[in-house]
Length: 267
Image: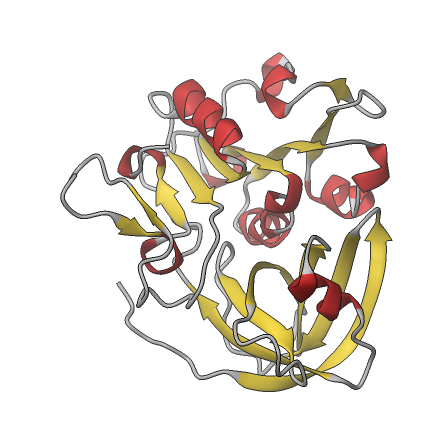
């Protein structure tokens, strides 16, 4: 496990726009260094002296040449409201990428060949964005993709065409305004997609519990755990989760995760 702790840097904002109700897309310059899908950055406005800590936000996309990163965030408090005020040319303070991301080489995935393997990507709320970069990387490796994505309503749906370009997409909304009425657990997959070779999920704990119970004994299953964070580098132990394999030592979500094999965490 990497012990690399990057230093925070100030980076220019390329664009910052609202893409759905309370949901924003922020693009900032990047130095081209690798960003594994599922990792995150701690980010805040560079001039926000009253915000000592950045907000942990997963990376949603990376330019092909590595020149920019994209994050998607929901405005819910002071920190994210400050992010929404950024304009092109202003700067964000970024620490990252941090944590352990989704594996791209997956032991135990069946499939007759790399070209016939199917991955199921399950996301809820702000857990949806990191699945886009993961989907891009898996598709580059020849995986066929299915998405199960859940939001409160149609007013929150974003990047629908971009996800559809990667694979088959099934939406669920709490209010029934788009897709299946209910949560992603209520989505009934077509038979051609109902037996994935690997499952990757990111979202609220009830959704992750469903994914773990449904798929862990069937195929390699990975969950990205959402939790409030402080330092982002594992020093403060503010974001821990039980480790069923070693009950005396809890996992630090920001450092040992946020992505875990489903068997490695108690949800």
